[in-house]
Amino acid sequence: MKFINVGFGNMVAADRVVALAASDSAPIKRLIQDSKDAGRVIDVTCGRRTRAVIVTDSDLVILSAIQAETIANRLENGSDDGDDEEDEVK
Image (cartoon, rainbow, N blue to C red; front, side, top):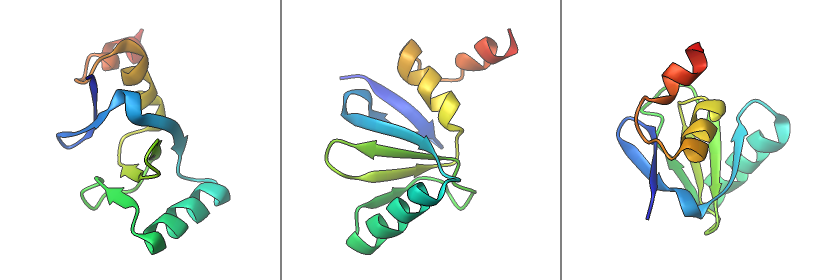
C-alpha cells in the first residue's frame, strides 16, 4: 500500500483518493461544511489555511495545508517526501 504525505507527517493511502481540489471555490466550501456537519472531515492543517481538499472512496474529506498541485505531484511521482520541490524549480 502506497501512502502520500499530506502535511505535518500525516499520510493518506494513495489508492483511496478519489478527488483532489483547491479549497477556494463555493462548491468545495459547501462540501467541506456539509462534511463537517456529518462528521466526515479530517483536518490535518494544524491550524493553518486549508489549501487542498482530498475526497476518499469512503466519503471522508481531508483538509490539508499543502497546495493541491503539490499533492497531485506526489500522487503521480509516488513521492511522499519533498522530492517534488526540485520538479517545481525546473
